[in-house]
Each structure stands twice: as C-alpha cells, then as structure tokens.
Amino acid sequence: MRPERALVVEDDAEMRRLLVGRLERRNLQTLGVSTLIQAREQVRREKSDLMVVDLRLPDGSGLELMKSMREWGVESRVILMTGFGTIETAIEAMRLGAADFLIKPFDFTQFDEVVNGLMNTNPPAAEGGFRPMAVSVGKSATEILEQSPDMKAVAELIRRIATTTTTVLIQGESGTGKELVGEAIHEQSARRSLPYVKLNCAAIPPNLLESELFGHERGAFTGASSRREGRFEQAHGGTLLLDEISEIPVVLQAKLLRVIQEHEFERVGGNQTLPADVRIIAATNRDLAKAVERGEFREDLYFRLNVVSLKIPPLREREKGVEFHLHEFLREFALQHHKPVPEVSALALAQLLRYHWPGNIRELRNVVERAVVTAGEGRELEVTDFAIGVSAENAPLFTGSKRFPTVAEMEKELIHLALKKTSGQRNLAAELLGIHVRTLRNKLHQYTGESESAEEEQAERKVEQEERV
Image (cartoon, rainbow, N blue to C red; front, side):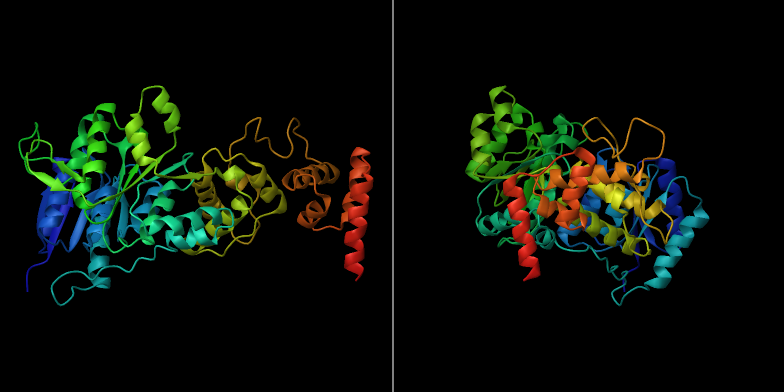
C-alpha cells in the first residue's frame, strides 16, 4: 500500500512551507508548488489524496485547477483557501467538488480540524486514497434549459444541432447563460463522454493566451520550465468552449482560424504538428458583426465561427423567466443552506418582475442567494431582502415620497403592471391579479376614469358566459 500523498498549491513561500510541514506531521507525503501550471503538471503526474489549494495563483485560479481535475476525471479531497471569500466562490468550489473552504487568515488549529474531519469522515480506501466526496451538482444543463419556459426554443435548437460537429456561436448579454447553453450542447453530443474544456479568453493576459490555447515547449519563453498542454490538447476528442471570443487579439485570430480549418496546430516554441479533433463553441457578449466592421475581429474567422448562431435573449425579455428562475433558486439555496423554502410577498414579486435585470440570470441568482441567507426564517421575503438596484428605467413601485403608500396607490400600480405584462389584455391581467375581470374593469374606472371599448366589453361578456356554462 503506497503512502498517502498531499499537494499544497500556494504562491506565498512561507505559507506553503508551514502547510507542507503541518501535513507531513500527519505522515502525509507532501509536495508544495506555487503556480497553476505546476499544479496541473503534478496532478497529471500522480494522484494526491489530499490537496490544499489557494484560490488566487500567479497564473490563474484554484477553481481552474479543480475544473481541469473534473475534466480529466481526477479525484481528490480539496481544501480551497482564499483571502477574498465570497458566497458565490464557495458555492462554485463546492460544485466542483471541494471538500472544504477556508477564509484567510485562519489559525492552524482550524486547519487541523478540517484535515482531521476529512480523514475521520472518509477513512482511506483500500488503495490508500481518500474516497471521493459525493457532490450534488443539481440538474444538468440540458434539464435546466428544457424545464425553463423562457428557453424552450433555445433547447429545441440545441437538440437539432448537438449531434453534429459544426461550430456554434452563442451570443447574448453577460449573465444570460451562454456557458449553460454550451454545456447542454456538449451533453447531448456524441462527444459527451469526452472532455468539455472551457476558456474565458478575457481572463487571460494577451501575451499568455497563445500558450493557454496551444500549449508550449520547454524553453519557449522565460519561465517555460517544462512542456505544457494547451486547451486544444486537453479537449482532444471533445468540446472546447471559447468564452468572450471577441477578446482574442487580432494577430492570434489568424492562428485560431487555421486550427479550425486545418484541424491541427503546433505548441508555442515547437515544430511538431498535433491533431485538433475538437468541436468549437464560441461565446460572446459583444456584437461580432460590428466588431468586424470596426476592424477588431477578422471577417473570415467570424464567418467560420458563425456556422450556427444561437442568440440568448436577456432575462427582461423572457416571458415567465424571472418567476421560474426565482423559485428554482429559492429551492436550491434553501436546500444548500439548510433552510425552509421561503415565500415571496406579492409586492416583492411585482418589483422583481418589473426590474430590468442588467446582470440577467447571474444577478438574479446572486440576489436570491443573499435573500435566502440573510432573511429570518418564518416570514415572507420583501423587496429589501433582495437589495436590487434602482434606476429610472427600473423604478420601484413607489418613489418620490418617504411616506408609506396607501393600499389604493399600490393597487393602482399592480394593475398597471399586470396590464403592461399582458399587453393590455384585461382578461389575462385579471387572471394574473387573481381577481374577476369585472372587478378589474371597475377598478380601472375608479382609478383612471377609463371606460372599455365595445370590443373589450363584448370579449369580457363572452368570458363571463363561458364561465356560467
């Protein structure tokens, strides 16, 4: 039986030395490295039963390492450390399989307790390694899209194109779910059992992006101490999602075009031609056609990427989208934080439906999590629990005065909102409000002096007759 191994990924030399020493006293054969590149090389070289990984590394993120491990099928117990802790980061870490999440600065007694807890809860398996933690990642991307009433058209198009190998361009505002769409395409393709690799082109410095895409040979540039695989090699046989494709420098766009057309590439500093059996999915929140007009994006690359185009509508344009995702996130975060699923007050729901959502689903997800985490149990969530921003376009239901609004004022505003949502169809507006259409008609007359047209009156009478029958 081999000894248990641990890997510490920490760029601060003193912190790395202390952590390595702490784990070695537990009789763990421990190695310390300082960069994402070194960590990836070590992960591919040999199995580590326990990993202690810093979130921020000189050349990337601890989350990127965990994503690579997931794509390669590498299992380990990971403790993620960060001095910049957020709930969103912790959730992403746990989703990727982290066993625990430590916020710096922490004392070593706390660190020892976390390590002890992992070892005691999950004793070493027969081969000497920790048993992998069973992590629930919720619904698949395909399930989420198919169950979303606002994304059914997109889900149907995905079904038609997923089984092909054609290049796909996904366009939409930030936070609309472009990565989710890319993942759903991969899940339904013939490549679903092979790697699905993602790269945010905007997150990599331009001078490092070529190496990130194609890899490099040892000595190719200062700091290239060993050969490194790029994303095309990692994704061989599978799918590569290039997010924020518009941010690739023009000089590098020509090389990317060649790879897509010729299905081959060379590492930086190398002369060996390697095959690229990769399906490309590109995503952007910019208008690439306009970028081509401005000379910021190559026209030939644009046409090569834009074989199939998927345009993801913003959340504010998706019918029933806000309400569907609101309740999905309420259930998700209530379960995650061991709380009962809260109800949302009618006024809060009206405000959420009225809000413009500039950050789209990502923003909605964040405000719902905040509401679930911070609100007290046993009461309805109110507008203030969600802490959404306000602008002239997203004005709250009542503004301009510090006095509390009257019931009549709020009723009038809700009627206005319902009519706007139903494009002025009173029968549907009354259904949304949970009142009879006659009541709505009377309220409109009371508040605005508005009377209905002969056609509207006739339609309402028809509805009433059908109800009697």
